[in-house]
Amino acid sequence: MVVSVLQWENNPRSNNNNNIITIEDYHYQCRRNSRRKRRRQDECRQEDQMKEKQRSDNKYCIYNNYIIMQFLCLFNIFSSTSSIIIPKIVVFFLLVSSSLVFPTHSSLVSNIQDNNNGTNESSQSFRPSQHVHKLRRIKEHLNKINKTPLKTIQSVDGDLIDCILLDQQLAFEHPMLRGQKPLDPPERPNGHERVGSSKMFEETFQLWHLTGEACPQGTIPIRRTSEDDMLRVNSISRFGRKPRKIVRRDSSGTDHEHAVGYVSGKEYYGAKASINVWSPRVANPYEFSLSQMWVISGSFGDDLNTIEAGWQVSPELYGDNYPRFFTYWTSDAYQATGCYNLLCSGFVQTNSKIAIGAAISPTSSYHGGQFDISLLIWKDPKHGNWWLEFGSGILVGYWPSNLFTHLRDHASMIQFGGEIVNSRDGGFHTSTQMGSGHFSGEGFGRASYFRNLQVVDWDNNLIPLSNLKVLADHPNCYDIRGGINNVWGNYFYYGGPGRNVRCP
Image 1 (cartoon, rainbow, N blue to C red):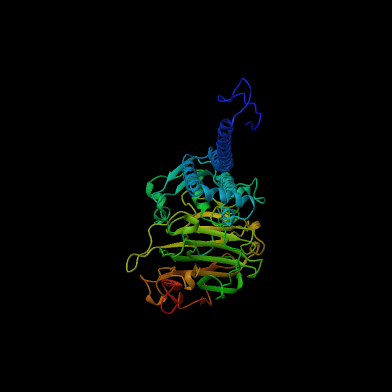
Image 2 (image 1 turned 45 degrees about the vertical axis):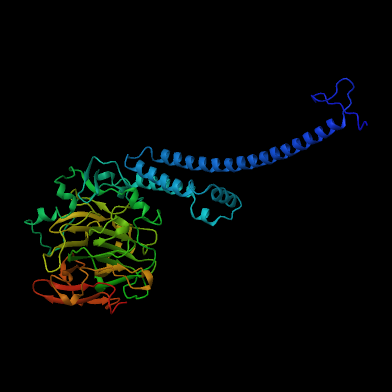
């Protein structure tokens, strides 16, 4: 029986003589075709799987290459900086890689797919390109504020103190100060006593002096700002500045709390005080504790002008808990002008031995030795600039009068005292200390103090205060108590522990 006539050129069992396929051959061929079909189906399925795997691998490789490209970009950005920065960038890359490149393959591909569709929330919270941009901005800002030093001193607390040429400091980049030179010392206020016996001690009150090194004449010591300093802050553009929020001394609704003594109602041309130095505990890295003088003019609105100096503990600004000598200024209520220390153009430093922003040593101890620093701020009658003096006649520098609006003429209020930031973590009052961390009633050796409070009048006379008023925003947390005697003149004790049974 002939079923069909088929020609199989490659069939070894076919009858090549008559090209006729038998039933046996037909069945064999059917079985063979069936096997071929199944094999082809398997091959097609494997090909589809391989193609899918290849597409996934391509996405994985693309993402991997993206991370590597970001790292190379980071490396290029910082290749011109010091060798200290490079290892930090490598660590940053490893951290990024460990969190992004090593998740399971399926979840990584899913994240990429979701990101392409704009639906991946986690990818929106971490964008490597944003970090590259931030680090680039940090480098640019560091290059702006850190000038090339003639000499660098490594402090025992880890600070780097750069000795910068006097006329190359950042102050002279201010539009109103370009091309100027530091001014000669001004006339001191009448009645100001200069005692030279303790001058050597006063010039070595900072930790970096323990190295025994000093900056050359014609230079000024400036604490170098590091990459770590800038990475701690939320806003690079506001680095070294206080919050924009207006701080009223009589307000209990703000996160800034005060215990201050003040005078107002007259024209003031300066102020002087001796400030007890402690090392208060700061409970939160984004809080601070300070003790300072405020020279104020204008209202507590957008036109507020202030000049400030004292000591502060600020982990966010400095990265540690040392009390540090600081200055501050603003001409628009902390909005767009002014800054701490020398972190922007404005204050002109003239002293070669004091580094603004450097740690103070020694500090006071409970039931132990007491240490204070004397500060004088006054308006030069000749040029109108506001000068800062430390101790017994050591000029630190000056704030040019053209930085200000109201303070071009005089101050309308002088304040002395303490300030803290209360972030209320967990809904409770902070345990950040003010002053010594003890209430004013404990007195000398236990509570922190201000003594010998004086003001400068219109005729450049240094005179005792009259009608000193004291105010504490939250007296159950931090309080203040004033007094007067023949030795300390006008004085007050102030401070407190923050959170306690009466301050929940």
